[in-house]
Structures are given as C-alpha cells and as structure tokens.
Image 1 (cartoon, rainbow, N blue to C red):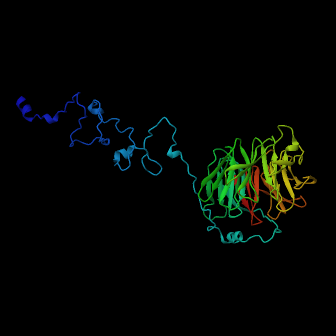
Image 2 (image 1 turned 135 degrees about the vertical axis):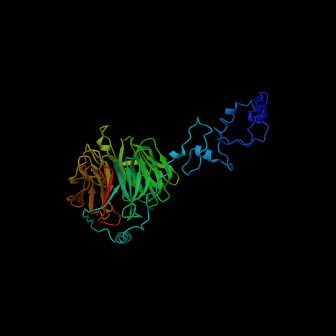
Length: 451
C-alpha cells in the first residue's frame, strides 16, 4: 500500500504554503473555478503590499467600498448584488457614508397624469370655449347639474382658480400639500398634473395671465411659481411666516401680492425675484387681499381679534406709497376671510364671520352700505369664500352646510342654492367664458363643476 500511495501521490494536489516574508499575494491557478467575486483593478504603480491574509479571506472586502468605474465590465454576480436605481443601473456605494446624501429613490418628480391640451374635449364644449363672451350683460343661469366630479385631494381643498387663457383647465390647492391641474371636460384623464413642490399644506393658488404658470403658497412659508407644461418649479419666494394668500396684479403680471400669518404684506417682482414693496402695520394674520379696479390700491383683511382692534380688520392701501388710505372701513367685531372687488362697479364685498356678506364703496371714504347685505348662508368658522360672476350680476358664496348660494348683486336677494357637499363648501369660482358654469370645492377634498 505504501508503494501505491507513493506511486499515485502528486504534489499539485496539496495547497501551496504561503510564506510570511512574501510581499505579494499568491493567486490560485487559472484552471481553478472562478470565485464568486470580481478582481480589483490592476494598479500600475508600485505600492507596497502588506502581508497576505489567509486563503479563505484573501479577497474578502476588496470590493466592498469600490465604486463602479466608467467603462469597466461588471459581472452578473456584481450587478445582481448591487442596488438598482430608478433607471435600472447599479448605484455606487457612498464614499462618504457619514454625510447626508439624498437617496435617488426618494427624489420625487411630479407625475404627469393626463393632457393639458384641449384636443380631447367634446365638440360642444370646445366650441363654447373658443367663443369669446360678446358682452358683459350675459346672465349667469346655472341649472345645478353636476358636470364633473374631480377627486384626488386627500384633505380639504382651500382654493380653486380657472385659467382665463386656457379655460378648460382648473387649479386646486389642498391641505394635503398638492396642487392639482384639472382638464375638466377631457374624455380621457381629467387629472392633468399633480404638483408636490410644497413641504406642507397649500393655502392658495392662482393662474398667471398668460396661462403658462400657476403661483401657489402655503404653510411651508413660501410662494412657488410652477411651469405647468414642464411640471417644474421656476421660482421660490421664501418668507418668515406662513403665506396665506396671493394675488397677481391686474395690470402687471410680473407683480404679485402675498399676505402672511404674522401680518406681513409684500409685493414681489417675479423678474428680479425680490420684494418690490412692503406694507407694515402690525396686523394679525392676513386673511385675504384684493386689488382695486385701477390697480393703484389694494384691500387687505386681517384677523385682529387677538388685539381687540376691529377697526384694522379691513384696510385700503396705496400701493406705491405703502401707506393705508383708510383703516376704519369695517368696525364690527367679525373677521372677514374673503374680499372681492366687483368686476365693473366701484364696490367690493367682504365675507363676514357674522354669517353675511357686506358691501363697501371702493372709492373714498370707503363707506359700508348699512342697508344691503347677503345673509342667507352661514360660515360657522370656516374660511368660506365668495365670487362675482363675469358679468357682475350674480354673487355666489360657499356655506358651512355644503351648499352654494347665488345672490342677485343689485337687490341682494337669494336667487337659488345648490346642495353640493355634505361638509362645508369652501370656495366657488365662475367660469371665465361660459356664464352657466361654476366650480366649487369642499372641506372633504372634493372639487366639483356645475352647469
């Protein structure tokens, strides 16, 4: 047996011994099975190599911190073990794990849900949209038929606004932190865009005059200008307090007014990205702002209940001089969450938490009409808004009972009401072209369009 063992023995079957004084690692023969890892890249510079590890630890950890190099072949096992990005490519390990780097999977791009074009609209709607209103004397007759029920917001909707240039598009701002663009009469997908640029609830949204952008503000202390077609944020106007309301200047679309929760009133210039004017009065939270017909003054409504100064609740300001023209417009102990200027007459209305709408003269001395008010609806503490029809003959208001109330502007009598929601109806907006269409939103997160 010893002779047979000596005859068939072979030195190549034994593992080679590693010499401790060796300065370079000994690699296995090329005919052996390839291990389950790839080799490190060759280093063409002479670098001293430490003593080799044990055979079973020889390659362990060599590739743990190695990032993929452009042009280098990556084996199937390496690709399978590496995490994948959104595009399917392997993600390189972080060379500085202690630093704060964004995760590519956490980068959220605004999804495009549908089309913003009017090509998918029914023919009758498209013909009505292309027909310009011929006179301001058109009567707004709304039958109350639900034309579109738009649902996406998970929380209350604070504001809605029609685009005057692209009148088939409606914007909505919600407490869920999103701004939605609706293609209201589309036969396909009605939800055209969803923007989540804000880090908190969105309080207000307005279309630009050209219809290419929407301006939104919210509880993240910022106003953001968004390109609707490209779904990108173009500008961010940061402030120190919550921005509750925004309004574009009626004559200069490069200017907009922003009111904050700490009484700040700032006129911003989009071209420079800087503040053009600031109006300081030491007021409470700004509830609403509205420009006058000539664009030289604006009206602000604020919550001054905490300081017991009801005479400052509504103030008329001179824009260029930054001074108040009158601060004793409304002296009753109620806040006014909404201010609206009549489209043609020198009057404006204020939605009062006393469960009525008051009307004032928009020229000095800005007097309250004590003999006319619109008082069939209720607020119950909700930020209910109101709006004039495009011809100025109707005044619509939301209500805490979920209904839309229509008043005759001249006589202040209730014309009719539409039961829209089970919860409070927050905002209403007449269509800019079709007088028999009105949009509304609710505290439950619903957006509706009635004809």
